[in-house]
Image (cartoon, rainbow, N blue to C red; front, side, top):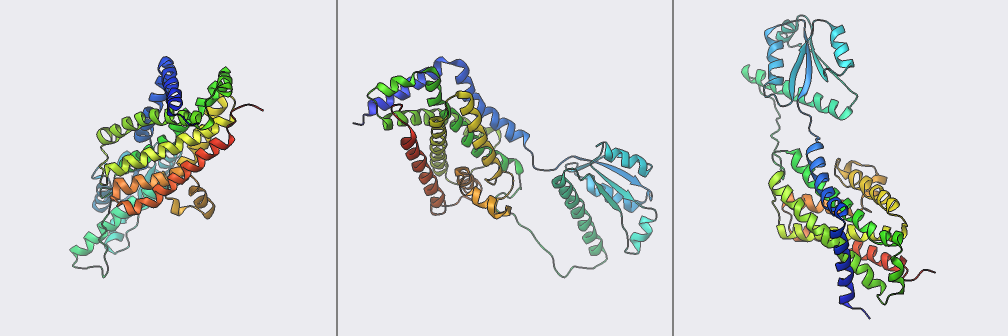
Length: 371
């Protein structure tokens, strides 16, 4: 017969053991916090403060004007060094002293006045993403300068584009990284903590007390699940404080829906870790296995770094099999789009399905008595 008292006795025992073990307590509380800070501040997808080299054979007003437009705001480019020969420039690019270089040829100003002005942009291609961004920055500046020159001559383009950004209007990449990091941390930390709950009893031998006791499988697993849920909920509150006050990410949607979806995802992560704990027999194996099974999918297949829609069919299918993918989508819809509940409901329902499937597997595979 199911008894709530037995469930809470498991929770009480686990919390007491956690509070007595200072190292485990510090680890459980510090790891999510440190991950949030390290990923939130350390993972920068924006390309800024790129060191440029300049080799200006023409040394004319127009070459200096273009260079001035490129480095005017000081946010994206700065001149690291001026060169006097292509050999010096090549050496600086080879040793990483500069990441890009502008080469203005002789007679650049004369060719420019004829409508044939050209200069060369040399880019360090060892990081393709950075190289593409540098090229797009320079092209944007040059295109804007061309438009300004055409307007001065009284010419207008027949077609023009006026872009307007929705949702993340300032294109602040730090907001996107911070919100994405929340999903990654909540996928890893609760799973790792709950993965050790049963394994540590197997290692110490205290699991035999459970085998011979009157407590049922459902009561035992539910007690373990609630323990992981409560500890992870405390960590969630700390992470929300960081998002609101340290990273200052604006919340456009419902705070209630944010809490609901986060608590549901914590339940899923905890159930997944508990399922792994059923199969592993050592804490070291459980820790390493859980980290591998949570870190890689949560970073690569959830839209954390790159949009899932840009992946291949195989990767897209994999993404839909990972709970973090749905939670990441919920976070972005709530934080940036203020999506109503009817648009969030399918993802919430999917997370609920994940939870029931994972907990059912826990109940199926956990054996009350060893055979």
